[in-house]
Image (cartoon, rainbow, N blue to C red; front, side, top):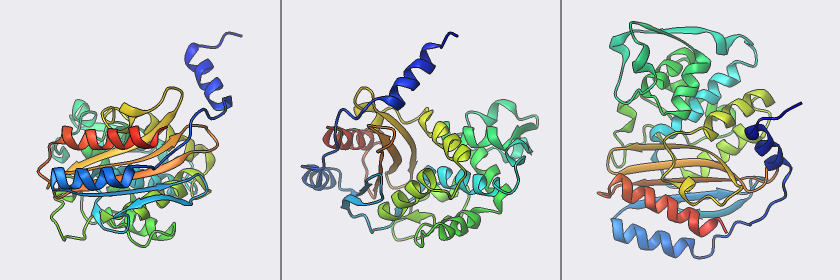
Length: 284
């Protein structure tokens, strides 16, 4: 039997021992310096594989969710699929008038277009497709269904109130469509590492996140050779930038990180560099 190179590489990744460890030395001074330099508010939370806090900075303050909500919405859909085994293959028709800004996948098939929910979740998580995300929210019962799902898994903070693109307004002081780094990173671990979802559904969501096509300039830019990452980014008004991620130095000992930046005039590229530099500090 012949194994293709990608399969061989994955096989050895999941068998290989950890080669590097996480460190947070120097992270807080760096964040304080960047907040001053960019006139920004930055929040970070990091948990170990067991859910224990490794690091927090403004981790209990609210930040705009932006597109990081797409992982939560698809997790809510996958939770529903536990009782409805054919749910992911259900077709949704998207009319051209439903198209919203930044929809790189759905915009290619609207005449109208028919997509399975599996396709829409992949588009939303791997490509950050906004129309796909709105369609998923419609199926699960609206933005409030994400809030209800978060409460069910023990997150009493994270809330989703609106659809794309309105949820990205990120007006300072507006609690709609917000989370805290501490809450969302704990929820991410719950989603990816506990039986909230079935094992096949956890693996599917992880695969979509590992195939993130729009995160290359953030934590991935600093990822050591041999490590894996499953992540989802977001961006919005008032300079908001965000990323949630599960990072795998070793397949059995991941750690989980949330980074949120807001209330700044920094460019997207500047905020991306902050996230990449956080990676440089902790991926040692």
